[in-house]
Length: 63
Image 1 (tube, rainbow, N blue to C red):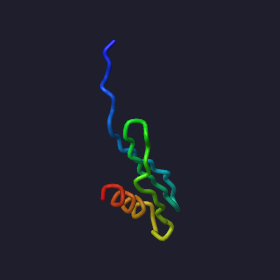
Image 2: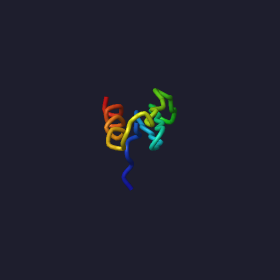
Image 3: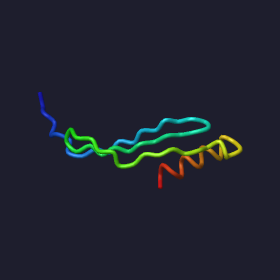
Image 4: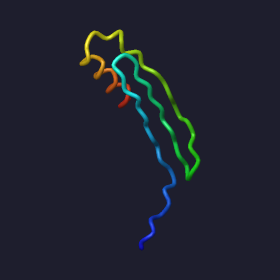
């Protein structure tokens, strides 16, 4: 069996999608110790249609 070197650092993005409210969290994991980097909520109900909501989610995730 070939052993893999341990992963030293990982960044995990978690998204709780919703049509009215979307939540997200970003974790940085060093070894086996997680640390919360950022979290937030986006209010999407003010946008008229799903296309605008998806565009807003996309711009927030990639920025």
